[in-house]
Length: 355
Ligand SMILES: [Zn+2]
Image 1 (tube, protein in one colour):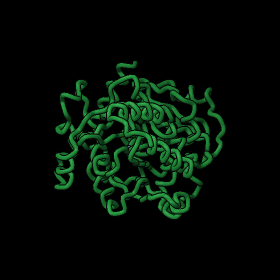
Image 2 (cartoon, rainbow, N blue to C red):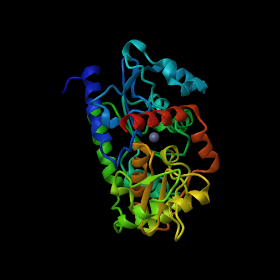
Image 3 (cartoon, rainbow, N blue to C red):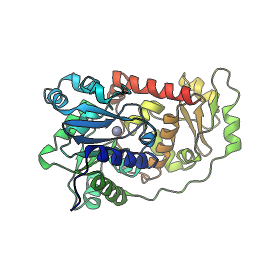
Image 4 (cartoon, rainbow, N blue to C red):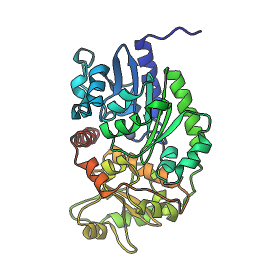
């Protein structure tokens, strides 16, 4: 039998796994998702605003004391949302702030927890009829479907409703996937198993019309638009079924955080200027049906990642599937919230640095 690895080795293994997961856009987009390890009463959790993809190049893991954090959660103390007060300064030289989803990780009993915004999972988790599909595909695994709740303490409490069955796989409605295990290797194996079982073939879509797109983005006085970082963002515009899905509204939290509420969809004959004039503000991205997607010039790398995510998710949802989108109240909970404002500010700073 293999000897138990020391926390230092395990943390190194987790960072390597985090970098692998973080560089797969079908699992993680931008600063989304997080990973953690529990060892010796300490929860090592990804820092807010950092990217899993950077796990090997820079310090992204913050040490948090588990016991006082769990006390705050069990007394539903809002302090639980500010996990930075439970960090261990001596082990946190970079002064990082723990992920918004730290309470989710702390409440899971397993030592290693991986939370990803897997597009195959999301494509199912936005459907009101997903339970039976999940039951078939996840048969034999200890899984639970968790009702939608805002990331942070509300989500942690929604997950805690399932604690009596100690699930290893959580499908978070309108959000993503959590897998948990006792070792880094076992967590990775479980993640691979679940993502394979939930995989769907994306609908193919015609290519974007680059010439038309460029013409639609020019002639703006105050605001400039540009092409997305990746051509993979366009199918939400060039595949009519995907455009229809995007038109329903916001499907998951990071869409709202980085692209705004719902999708700005141009009407026939509108260019970017006409869309901005109609909406009364410049959206982070504009979907031009049958043509392609434009991004506002100052869109952050996370916004580009979310534009691609929308195309990847929508292409995996069958036309006509019954969808649940975020409500007005749920939008407000996401945008009018200190922790989110901090994360958005970090994304803007990172964008300025990389510019
Ligand atoms: Zn999440």
